[in-house]
Image (tube, rainbow, N blue to C red):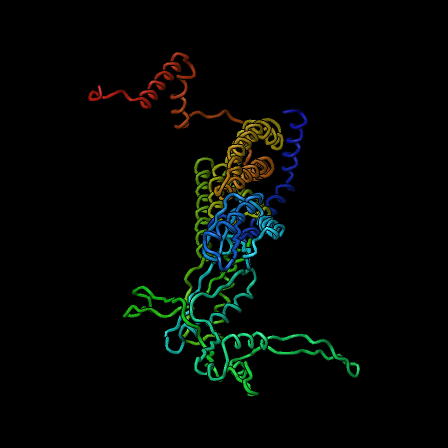
Length: 569
């Protein structure tokens, strides 16, 4: 290390002993850490960005073999040219083809979608004439719902699956207004629909066919702009036609004229406004012991509402907002017979697991501080203990800045780094305490000399730890983003602990450690006497060291290559 670097580090330590810089670092670290704990999104696992795109093609009239030869294979060749595609999956069926593109982990989602659109639209001339429609659907991890609600009623006759479906549709509209919510879907129940049940006898009597009805519906259910009419300095917008508003208007729709007599839809069909035909069934049942469990275990009709969050949003905050909205909905909009059951709450489980890990982290910090207090003294424990929140505060603030979330891997990295980040402050305070007892000059000179003696080991130990964990950032595949918080948090916390050892620890030691007269180091401690007896013979005798080394190598060889047994001989 050059003299310029030596003088620079000495000046930094000397400036830190004046108190302004350490106090500023301590205040900024605590405030940044507190804000990061409140603002950083929480989740159970780190988010793994794996862009996926589904391309669905409709080609009615073609068999599965024709779809494969004319549509699927040419589309596979075309889509394989898109950069960043790792895997391509295709399925062909009668009249339809589906191709799924899976990009490499970490690829930009917007770029993947844009490249897919560009490739398909730039090659429209190569699309077979039999293809009617094709649709591109992006798929991502955030599409998975974080909450699943079940709507049920203990009065199944009054509130059946049709009524529950209509209530769920209204609730989904209210939930969609919550900030940071994404897709909200209603699953189950029979939706409202208007059915036209044709009567063949009436159709034949009025010389009308189903084609006439379809054409009449297409022409009548249309609203067109007919221009503007200017009259008396006023502009009147003219419109022609109208949309069919309800079942009564549908009954009065004229669909044909026979011998000068109009034929209305009510004359040839029965029109019903109500539930559609059931295509699936959803039931909810409760385990024995639940207050709502039934004795016959038949269950009740249920309609599910799935709620997804936007990308990068806090799952815990979104779930709490949903619960608050549900509380308002229950009190104002829902009948007492209708209930909402929370079937899945990812926000609650994520918050519970994060809180458990944070409790473990706090217990680990307390254990380390108590351990240091027992063996080094309570003043040393306070100095090291105050260094921990500084390191964690700055690390959490950088997590928020660089887009990392608080999850189990992040907290595990912080727990793992606890034993590493206290090494520098412990080494610093111990050496400062020794120099205060045995050094020369004033307290400031002794502290600077103490840090000067150990700064190279402190820097090199931190660099070694950073290089040990840095390769985790280059892991490919799914494990790369999963282990990214480990590769980021451990090196950052260790580097911050080195900064604390150079800036904050000397200032705290000057404030808390009490100077004492220089005295020779005592050698009456039991552990020191035992250590001297074990180590002194090997340090004084080269022959004993060689004998001990040979004995140890022989033991390792016998353990790795055991002698053959008598039976094998």
